[in-house]
Length: 272
Image (cartoon, rainbow, N blue to C red; front, side, top):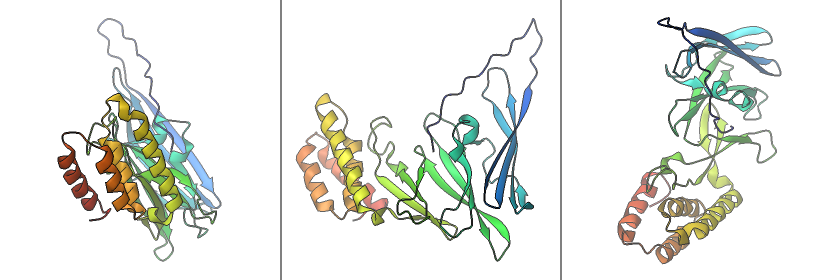
């Protein structure tokens, strides 16, 4: 998923006391893989001095030209399709076989609005027994994801990071995030991060390099070190990680920071 680009709104002129009328635009997007075709339609209202609003969202899914799903997505009222913010980001609405079962899923990404937050995906998979599409949700927070077939086996991984580290120890700008890798299986998102130790090691290395680059600039390094230690936990190298942190972090709040960090990692499922 690409980074959200800024939207430039054109001004609507008015004369005297006349009120500019609302201009509604109907948008329709269609994507297809094999015999599965998905169509997303909505109305976009452009009002003076306001961001465009989206309403009347509708998702239609066809199998071999037969409509089997035709209803509003399970998005929140004021959330918008990410595709509407970035028309070039075709990966925010696509049909793709995620788990190699020759049954393509429909993926639709949404943006909630806000300075950083948030994005999430609605994933529709076909239940052959019920003969209908079932909706699942994956929440990405500030960060989004990228689709990659890491094994070359037709099973697609969602490359992302743990958004819960945002603001956990420092500002958003100074926060860093441990790697997360997900796979969609049996209608659920499964965390498979520990399956890829080489990728975790590479990510931890980059975080340590980032720390080395900023440590002498009076920077707040608590966010970077927290994410680095989480990666070390994923590798089963938490003892070495703690040793490094105790060596390098010598600020006056170090003991409080270490206590809070250990508690946070435990509550976040990384370890004791």
